[in-house]
Each structure stands twice: as structure tokens, then as C-alpha cells.
Length: 108
Image 1: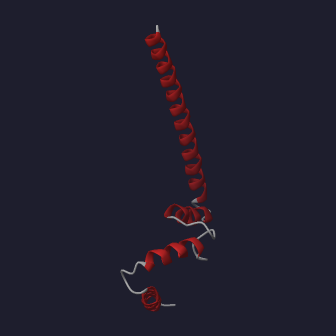
Image 2 (image 1 turned 90 degrees about the vertical axis):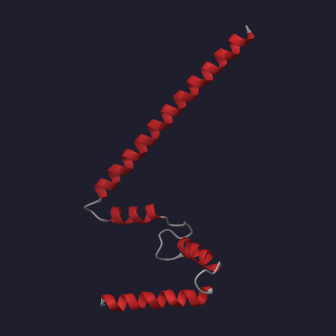
Image 3 (image 1 turned 135 degrees about the vertical axis):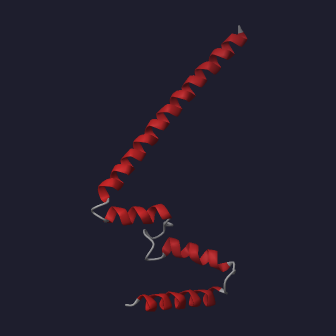
């Protein structure tokens, strides 16, 4: 299929979409697109709104040459998140201890 034909077909699809939705600027467009992103066959898991991260993850995980990199980045992200949570918990605990100490000092 030629690129010209694909462009024409896409233009025809867009024109048909606008005719069905009430034209550009119609408040129905956002609703229609949202439903398509949630239930469209070409947008990931049915019933879950696909976002940009989902689309990129799917593309790069399905490519054997990029899969190890993506998996490594995902593991690194999880490790950083866990370390950050440990850090925040330690800070909260430290602040709680200081608050209790100040309360005791005020009482005395």
C-alpha cells in the first residue's frame, strides 16, 4: 500500500469521525476518544485506558533488541522507588521521635 493511499485513507477516517461526532470542537469528541482508548481493540488491555508509557513499553518490550534495556530500566526504577520510600519512612520516624521529644520537654 502506498504512502499516498494511507494518507488519503487516514484523512477519510478523520473526516468520517468528525461527521459522526458532530465536527471539530464538538464536546462529544473527548468522550468518544476516551471510550476508544479504554475499549478500542488497538489500544492495549480492554477496559484499561492506555497511556503513552503503556504504548512505549509494549513496543520496546516486544523488540528483542531493546527488551533487556527496558527490563533493566524497570528494575532500576523499582529499586529507586523502594529506596526513596525507605528514606521517607526513616525521615518520618525521625520527625516523629523529635516531635515526641519536644512534647516531653514541654510537659516537663
